[in-house]
Image (tube, rainbow, N blue to C red; front, side, top):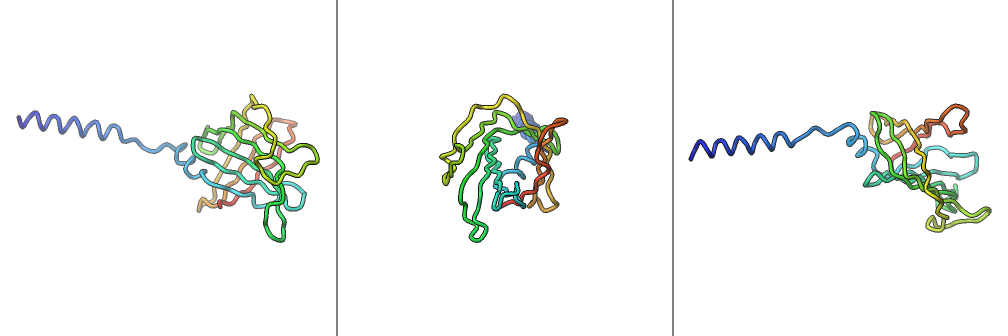
Length: 160
């Protein structure tokens, strides 16, 4: 009886040890990305233009472009939004896919982001590189563009 008990115990411990695995770099990066990030600088030359990025659960990410009252910090209006999924493709690379753009009607003022107009899902992907500062409170995102593309350069975000 005792040898069978010891054999079963060894088997159970072996299974338990084998099922424990190291956390991958991708899942560690995903945990560090999760949360709300706000652009440090104006994303455009327009006064009060801001971008918020929310990396959420289930590999969802939302980029929202909006305008604030620079005196009060209150959001005045929303310009656009992009909702997509993302995957980590390398230690410092991620890719957006299943991208759904939301925009405002021309010359409209949208004071509730839920009133942005949903567009068709894009069939392309968007590659980005990313890196954190040492304390993981700042994030640099860089949209990797092809030659002759009109892209925004690296943007720095602060974790909220």
